[in-house]
Length: 259
Length: 349
Image (cartoon, rainbow over all chains, first blue to last red; front, side):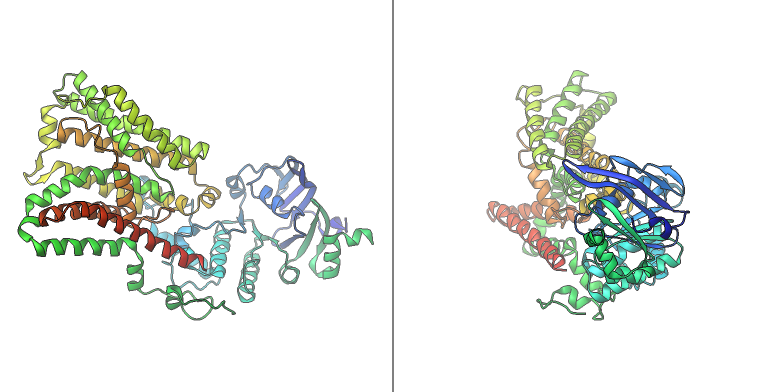
C-alpha cells in the first residue's frame, strides 16, 4: 500500500472495502478497496484483467459482489441494480455507451426517464417530445457541446459525437458520481480531447468522476487521484501531482513491489 | 482529423465538413431516408396506373370498398405485428391465434343461443381473451426464458392451430353468429357508406399509431428493439414490456378473428395458413426493420394495401392474378434490401 491513507483524508463520497468477486475459479476481485472524494476526478488504472471493469460494474449495480462493504457518504449501502445506483446519484458511461442507436440524442438522454405531457395526456402516457428536446439541448449547451441537429438518430453520429451524448446523459442525471469506462478508447486525439474537456466541466460542477483508462497521459491530464488495481487488489493510491508515470506503471506491473 | 479512405456515402454529403460538427441533414434527405415515405409513393404510383388503365372499374366506390374490407382484418393483425417487429421480435402464431379465437367465440355464442346483445359481447370477450392468453404465453416464454421469438411463436402456431381443430372437431362452426352482429359489424355500413369492418380497423390503426409514436409505451418499444441491454440499464422493464407487446399482438389477432366471424358467419379454420407471413410482409414492406428499432404504423398500412391493390388491379385488368405474388415478393425483397443498405451505411461509422 503506497500511502493510501496519507493520500486520502477522511470524508469519502464513495468507499468500497474488501470487495470480492469470483467467476467460477477466476477471482476477479480479491478484497479490493476503492474510494472517491467529492468533487474530484479519480482514475482507476490497471493492466488488462486487473478487475477494473468488474469493480465498476459492482459499484454501478450491474454485478453483485460476493463479499465486501460499500459506503456512500459514510452510510453503508447495497447496490442491487442500476436503479439503486441511480437513486444514490451515480451514473455510468459504459464502454459500449448503451445508446439506442435508432433514437435521437434527446430520446437517448431521457431513455427510461421520459417526460410526460402535463394533464390527462400525461397520465395516459403521452410523452412530451418538445420539453425533452428543449431540456436536452440545454444540457448539451451547458456542457459546451455543439448540437445542431437534434433529429439525427444517434447511430448516424460519429464515434466522438456518440460518446458525448452518452457522457452528457450521465452528467445530466448524476448528482454525485459518474463512472466512465474507457471513454476515450475508441476515439481519435481531437475527440478524446473533447471528452476530457467534458470531464473537467463535470468536475467544475462539483460532481465526482471515476475514470477508467489505459491511457496514462490522459489520466495524468485529467485526474486528481490515481488508484491502481493489480490482480484484483488495489496496490496503490496516489495524488496525481505527487507521482510520476513510471511509479504508476511500476504499481500496475508489480515492478514496484519486487524492487 | 485523419479519416479512413472509403467511398463517400450519404452521411458525408449531409454532415458539416468540420470534424465534430453536427451538420443538419436537409429535410429532403431525411424524407427520402424514411422507407415508409418511398413505399407510400410506390403505392400511389400503383393506384395511379390502375386508375389510368381502367378508371371506372378500379376507382369505383364498390371496388374501393371491397379492397378496404378485405384488408381490414390483416391491418389489425399487422398493427400488432408492427410493435412486435420493432422490439426485434416476430410473431408467427397470429394466424392460428386468429382461428383459435374464432372457434372459441363461435362455440361460446352457439352455446348461449346465438342471438342477443349479451351473446355478441360474450363472443367478443371470449375472442379477445383467447388472443390474450396465447399472446401472454408467447410473451412470457420469450421474455423470461430468452428463447428466440421465432421458435416460441412457431410452437404456439402449431399449438393454437391444433387446439382450434380439437375444439371444433376439424369442421367450421356455422350458425353460431347472432344476426344482429352480422348485419352491423359483419356487413353493415356507417352512414350507409363506410363498412363497420373498415371503421373498426381504422380506429385500431389510429390508436396503434398514437400508442407507438406519442406515448412512453411506444418509445420503450423502439428503445428495446434498438438496444435491449441499454434499455435494461436505463431502468426500463424490458421483460414486462415484451410480454405486453406480444399480448397485444394476440389480442389484435383475436379481434381480427371476431370481425371475420361476424362477416362470414362461419369460422375460417383453413383460411389463415399464411396470415402470419402476410402480416410480416406488410410490416416489412412498410419500412419496419426486421432487426428492430425502426418502423411506423403508417408504413404498415401502406404495406397491407400494396399487395391487396395489386391483386385487385391485376384481376380488373385481366392480368393473371398469380403475378401479384411475384410482384409482392419482389417488393418485399426490395424493402429489406433498402433497410440493409441503411444499416450498412451506419455500421461503417
